Length: 360
Image (cartoon, helix red, strand yellow):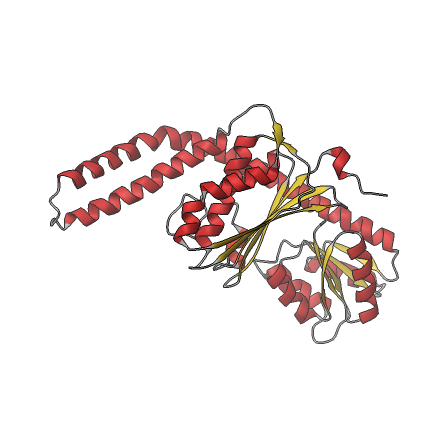
């Protein structure tokens, strides 16, 4: 899948044509028919790009673009405006409001596809630079954390444990000591995982059966599943080839992702791990699906930020670590979620060249 595109036009024929062309090109499409729907669907689905007509009922494209750009959740989504208006002033207005590009009707479909690919590539390159700078900043910070924080945290934890051992059971201060110990253990884990993110094991890749690796990750997370009395289902594509991976690092990524999914479940919840082949893209897709509490749209924006967590416990380093490992294998990870309905984590890894070829 090349990404999700929101198509917004009040002309049903235009929408159907664009949807057909974009679906064939490998994009996932969502359709709306006025500016209000554009704003709502952008917030609900956070597409990779919006094709936005200008002349529409209820709310026109100019107003919709301005609202999308003013919303913290949607303001960075690329917008390509589609219009039959030829006046330069209208084009300037659209660009000033925040449109990234302007395409005048009638347009050639190949030109439209080229502009979409170009805009998505620019967005991808920008995000890559942002991620690289985050990793550099994180590396500098982790060095300081290890040097300045590890020893004091270990000392505090040691004294808290000693206090608990020496205090009588009826001492009210024992509860405070337990809180101190719990929080220092969380800090110790944060320091440990921060260091681990920068010191992932190096070594040669090996030929790995992805299903055996997923099963091993599920086994390592078994206790979490049992605590939630979860039902676990695997749906594996039996025709997938082995992949060349750094086995240990990829196992760490899978354990982090599956562990998070278990922790998000309610009692008697369901977890599904699925693999399938994307023939057109030459990719292997792994989906980890839970029916748990879900993640808010605002939290999704920061889900891969180091130290970000919506849980009462945890270091906030698990997902950044998983993302780094997957990207080092030339893969990608995406998370979709709805509060109260559950979450789907999709991991995309390249298939071996001879396996990636689309059959004639």
